[in-house]
Image 1 (cartoon, helix red, strand yellow):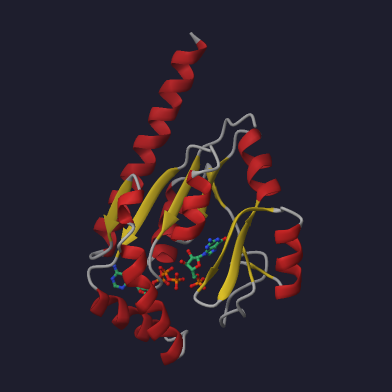
Image 2: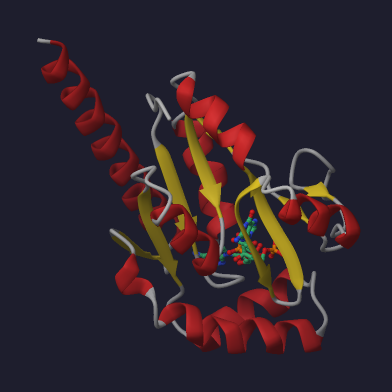
Length: 198
Ligand SMILES: Nc1ncnc2c1ncn2[C@@H]1O[C@H](COP(=O)(O)OP(=O)(O)OP(=O)(O)O)[C@@H](O)[C@H]1O
Ligand SMILES: Nc1nc2c(ncn2[C@@H]2O[C@H](COP(=O)(O)O)[C@@H](O)[C@H]2O)c(=O)[nH]1
């Protein structure tokens, strides 16, 4: 596949703050588009179909697995999530850069797909802080929070797979660090393109 755009992959345990941080990156880097995932999870209050996720049935999702339509997919915290292969390939071939907010299982599939992603893991200050953030957000049941915290420990054990790790303790500091990574990677890809054109 011809690839001119850059692919950024961000993963984090649920509640670490990646959605909050990604919103800040999107404002500061309008040339990078957010890849809207598909999920079988029910929408949270305020979530919009087509903006936050494409909300699909389990039947639709599994049909798309069989048809090979996912670039990556995974069962995360009891629901299916996936990224459309056609969407990503079309955007990258058109020279557009994309940001994927996906879990560790999906990130591993993208790392193996030959798309040379810039991989970033957002780390919470501690499991206790993660619990407080999920409880304060108030979007998940106690049972869901317990499951997400258990999964967080397994995800944090895999941070070594990522090129960058950003700890989200103070929000402004973490957002600045994340933006510095985007700045550096976009500049470096631009320099590579220039030198290959000489
Ligand atoms: N640095 C921070 N300090 C304090 N609270 C924060 C910080 N970053 C995010 N939060 C809050 O923590 C909660 C979880 O953040 P957010 O929804 O962005 O997490 P997430 O990683 O996207 O979770 P999920 O994967 O479940 O969607 C939110 O209520 C958010 O406002
Ligand atoms: N493998 C994939 N993981 C995804 C995708 N979209 C989101 N996610 C991850 O799922 C969890 C839970 O998200 P939530 O919105 O239900 O809190 C989180 O880690 C996301 O990063 C995807 O397309 N593929």
